[in-house]
Amino acid sequence: MNSDFLTNALIAVSLTIVLIGAAVVVFTRAPSKQAVVLSVYGILLSIFFVTLQAPDVALSQVAIGTAVVPLIVVLSIRKIASIRSEAESELEGSAQGDAGQGSEAGQP
Amino acid sequence: MTRRARLTLLWIGLAGFGLAMATAFTGLPGFGSTFHPYRDLAVVATFAHATANSVSSINFDQRGFDTFGEETILFCAVVGVATLLRPVHRERRRQVSSGGRVMESTSLIVYVLFPLTLVLAADVVAHGAITPGGGFQGGVVLSTGIHLLYVGGRYTLLSRLRPLEWFEQGEALGVVLFGALGLAGGALGAALFANFVPQGQLSDFLSAGTVPLFNIAVGMTVCSSVVILLAGFLDQALAIRSDPGTKGDPPGADQKEEAAA
Image (cartoon, rainbow over all chains, first blue to last red; front, side):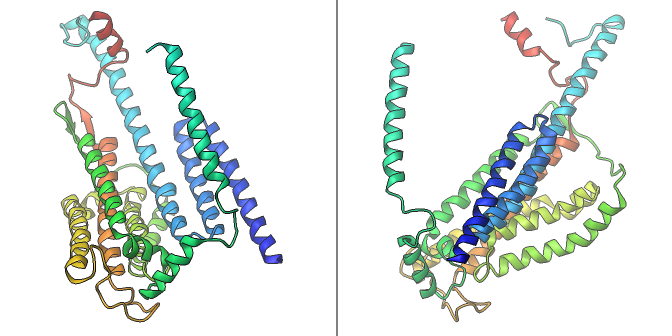
């Protein structure tokens, strides 16, 4: 009876922490920060799985949710930033190029 | 279809869905109760085949064909991502410099954790039939362990230590091995994906029959898949740039094209 109560209390506490973590992930606006928060949330979720006696799922969650998915998100953000900076330098380059020689970009 | 008709259809669908879900949820056994018909059947079958980890037994012995489907889904998804992320005709690969400062503490942690992670991954795959873990978990741990080299700031070392062709073939080989084991179960055992190898003593290292073999096959596929997946993203983020002169569309190019059309 007593150990039943303890188990349920553990599940309730860790479920509450997971719900709070999920809210923090959703309300983090900057994608790069969100990737880090998502990684922390992955650890919370895996602890929750351990309290529910599912160590196999917890292991998968640690590896995928804490390492692989945030890494993919961070790499995608970096790629988008590099595309933006290229497009900006392209705009500046074509503005300078128009003065000297006819540039291909920017013509209708 | 008018907006009104569509909304009516939506509400009918939602009402039906809600009714079905409510019926299903009220029929569920209570949370934490002792009534588990699926568990009772699965655990008995697990011990009948001398497998200590019932999750592995369910995945690779009792419903091996389903797991084959899941593995093929992963395989196809990674092939799709690799196709989308490959360099296209207006892009080129540039040399990635290995420069950039890495904190010494980070380097130290990578040096300590890199071998430990590889050993842990081998352990998780090898003991998948006995302890929690298995091919999927071990494969992901192995591939993330390999990518610790990138965290340590050595992208060049990572690309040298990670011959992509090997992983491309390892991914396919894992799927073929999985299917071959299933076919062998059909040829030598009772049915497709049957456990046809002698199962030995419960919780011995070599027990559970085909389950450790399936774990190795899945470990190969999953590790190679994640390595190929991350290689595609790393390549796009670090090495692939659009050609000079044909650089990416400037901001607002789509709107201009639409306006012109």
